[in-house]
Every structure is written in structure tokens, then in C-alpha cells.
Image (cartoon, rainbow, N blue to C red; front, top):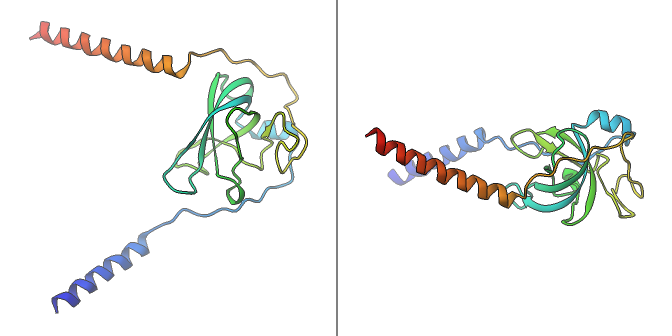
Length: 187
């Protein structure tokens, strides 16, 4: 009797879990007719050229989106920074763009939470994002790289990330030391 009751409770909990479980919606890659550079520039939140320095998975799953880091060469729209990142899918059905480390790209990105829980710059195959020097720059826009109509701005150089981390560490040690000294004098 007790064993049957336990199994019934377990199955009820399992059933209730499946009723309340809300999986994320799936999306298939379907792109509208390619826009002109002017319209794509207007639609985008950021447009820049740069070299991919690192690609990192955003989640733990097999189909997790990718965070793609760039050394920025020029910007046309958005923040004029020398280091930026965009998030994209893994490719095919989720419209993710296939970036490669060391390659140069022009990136048209929009702020979206399509691949993450928070709004970040994202780019897809449907955007005019393309490899700058390959024949098949973007499978949906083959053999042409589309630049914005105006001249881009060169971003100010920022220190390498390693230097920024080192300075943050020095600042943390200085703050800790100052706090300890003040603690001693106040007591």
C-alpha cells in the first residue's frame, strides 16, 4: 500500500512538472528578401568591421549559441569601441552565422534576446554580415560584400584585456590594503 502511494505521488509530481515546464520556442531560419545597405544600416543597432579573436559557447548544451569576440577596425553605427562581441546561433536552422577565428568580417548586428535571456548584439545569416575576403562571403548574399554608404570611424585603441584584468587586480589589492589600514586606525 505504501509503495503504491509513493509511486502515485512520484508520478503526480512528475506529471505536474511536465505541465509547468515551459520550453523555449523553436525557430527555423527563414529570411526575407535581402535589404539594401542603406535599409540594413537603418535597421541595425551596430555596424562594424573587425577580426574574430575568440569564439566561445554561451551555454552548456550541444546547440548553445556562440559569443564571437572582435578586434574592431571601423564602425559605422553603434558604440565606437576597439573590442566588441556579438552572439549568433550555431548555424543552419537557427540562422547562426559561421564565424572563424582570424578572419575579417563586416558585421550588421541588432540588439536582441533571440539567443540569450538578455538583449545583446546578435547577427544571423539573414543580415548582411559577411566575410570580407572570401568569394562566398555570406551564403544568402554570395560573392558580394555590402558596405554601408558612408565612411566608417576608426575606434580608439583600448588596452589588451590582460592589462585591464591586471589593473583591476592591482586596484582590488590597493582597496583591500587601504580598507585594512583604515580599519586599524578606526579601532
